[in-house]
Structure formats: structure tokens, C-alpha cells
View 1 (cartoon, rainbow, N blue to C red):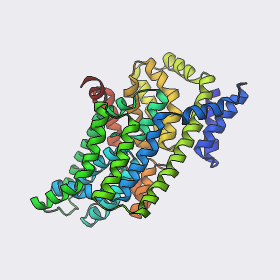
View 2 (view 1 turned 90 degrees about the vertical axis):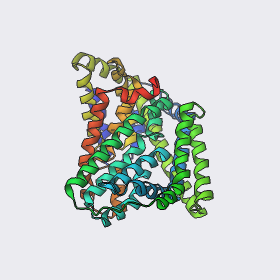
View 3 (view 1 turned 135 degrees about the vertical axis):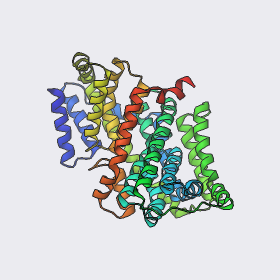
View 4 (view 1 turned 180 degrees about the vertical axis):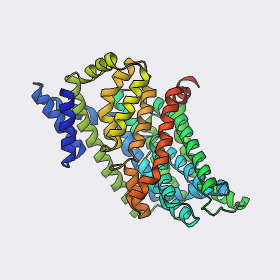
Amino acid sequence: MIILLILVCLFGLLLIGVPVAFALGGMGLGMLILGGFSPLMAPQAILSTLDGFILLAVPLFLLMSNILLKGGVGRDLFGAVQAWVGHWPGGLAVATILSCGLFAAISGSSVATAATIGTVAIPEMVSRGYERRFVYGLLAAGGTLGILIPPSIPMIVFGFVAEESVIALFLAGIGPGIFLVALFIGYAMLHARFSGSYTSMPKADWPTRVEASMRALPSLGLAILIVAGLYSGAFTPTEAAAVGFAAALVITAGFLRTLTWKTLWEAVRDSAITTTAILLIVAGAKIFGKAIALYRIPQEISAFIAANIDGPIVFIVLVSVVLLLMGLVFEALSMILIMTPVLLPAAMALGFDPIWFGIFMVIMVECALITPPVGLNLYVIQSVARSSLGDVARGVMPFLALMLVSAAVLYVWPDLALYIPFKW
């Protein structure tokens, strides 16, 4: 009954327009006071949260992502991939998906991935006769790879909340990320084969391929540097973010010469705004999490699940339904911050590996990024394409189904996530 009342109050605050950070923090503070606990726990929770070294990676990865966005790196990546696979059946769609995956491996941001590749790919694909809804759905879903393929800001937040290794989470995201890219490519090629509404591209000659590849080479080198540094243990996630930020400056300002003082200032400003919003949500969620822990709500949920949920598969289905419903009104980080303290103890009690469960949650959070009414990627593509939200939402449905398929495969085959970090 208490759990239901808390959720009703929280949703009520959100529905009347209270920002997520203040709704979470206010609910947590109110619960502390009503429960007879010291309200001083609220500022203590905020200070202990914002003092975390791992959270320094968030503004640094955002800075790197925005600098690459402003520096036009996505255009070079798309051009290089298009030169190699553009003549395949549905080649432009395949190039778009691969470009999203590559940019995701550099930036760690879903919104930046969707905006960067979408700006280049949408006009090109539409001019070649691809169905608009398919193009919009492809870009909105392809952008979600930004939080699954490492580095990933939601994975950093999950690792911080769950007190698990962020590097292990990054490595665990590689297998599912590649699998999801393969699913998207397979669907795109089948769609192109049976729709027949697009104009195929001629095969690029070798000089064109070499020129395009050379221009994209520094960006690909940055992705390899970050992943290799994390895997080898040379970098912590925060150090990798700092190295990536410095390398992004060198690539865009030094090699490509596409970054100006104006665009650098815009990148810093946008990163500061986003960082402030994220840290406010983290702080509010920390107060809320402290309150529900003192109310022993996670333990009660774990006990309820142990007594009433018949087996792990029923639990996973229940978690999936809850996260999908939350995705209708919450954005990605809020879902992770609210639900991780509630669901993770129950998952571990049923024998799920916390790293595996983190990747499963990230995939379900990906779905939230493309479900209306608050799916951020839908609004990004709508803005880039100057289209209606309904067209983008309808176009994304097949890709949402593929993402749910990848979650089911992850359940059946846990080593898809766990092989690289623990067995390779």
C-alpha cells in the first residue's frame, strides 16, 4: 500500500509539470520527514553523490560528444561507410546503421548519435526514394545504440548506483550492441529487398573509398583508443573520457579544421546545461533512493517477488513490462536511477548477475528513448527531419520490436553480454 501511494504521488508531481529532479528530491525529503528520519540525510546524500569520482566522466563524455557533433565528424563517418557499403541492397540504410554504431562507440550519447547521423543521412536517404517513416524510425532507433555500445552515460550511472564496475559494464555492452546492429542491418536489407522503392547507388571506386576512409580515420582511431584503453586497464572511465575529450579537440580543430571558437563555445554551453540537468536528477534520485531504502521498500519487493513470482522468466517479463510502461513518462536516466535500487536486489536474489542485469536494463531503457510521449530520440528526429511526431513514432515500431527480440536473446544467451568481460 505504501509503495502504491509513493508511486501515485510521484506520478502526480510529474503530471502537474514538476521537473523530475525536484519531484524525486521532494518526494524523498517528504518521506524522510514523515518517517521520522533526520532531514539532514538529504544534503548528506547529495554531497556524497556529487563527490563521486566516476561522475566526472559524464561532463567529459558530453563535451567530447558535443565537440564531435559540432565538428562534423558524423558526416565523415557516414561518407566513409557509404563509400564501402552504399551499393549493397538497402546500402544507404546499412551505412546509416553502421555510422550510428561507430559514432556511438565514440560519443556515448544517444541524442548526439541520432542528431549527428540524422542530419546527414535523412536528406540522402529521402532523395534516394527510401520511405520517410522507415528513414525516421531507422535514425531514431539507430541513435539508441549510443547508450548500449560503450562508452555509455547510462552505464556509468548504473555502475555508480549499483556499485558495479563501469568497465565491466562497458565491455558487456559490446556483444549486445553488435547483435542489435546486425538485427537492424538484416531488417533494413529485407525492407529494401521487398519494398523496392529506393534508387540503388553505384559502387564507389577505390580512390573515392580511400579518400573517404582517410578523412574518417582519426575518428575511428579515437573509438579504438577509448575501447582499447578501457579494456586493457590503461584508463579508468573518467580518464578515458578526459583522453577522448582531448583527442576530439585535436581531431576537429587540428586534423579536420572544422571546429571554430564559436562552435567550441556552443559545445561547452550545451554540455554544461546537460550536465547540470543530469546531476540534478542524480541528486534527487539519491535522496529518493535513500528514503525508500530506509522504508525497506527494496526488501519488501524482494520478499514479495520471492513469495509470488514463479521463476526468473516471470520476473524478467514483469521487469520488462514495468520498464516499458515507465518509458512512456520517464526519460532514460530517471528510469535507471529510480528502478535500479528497487529491482537489482530482487534480481540478484533470483540469481541474476548484476552486470548482466545492468545491460538488460539499458536495452529496455533504449526502448524508452523511442516510445512516445517522452522518447527523446523521437523529438530529435522530428526536429532534424521537420516531420510530424506521429510519422517518426510509427516508423520506429519495427525497430522497437527488434530491440525486444535482442532483450529476449540476451535472457536465453547470457554470454552475449558476459563473455567479453569475464570469459575472454
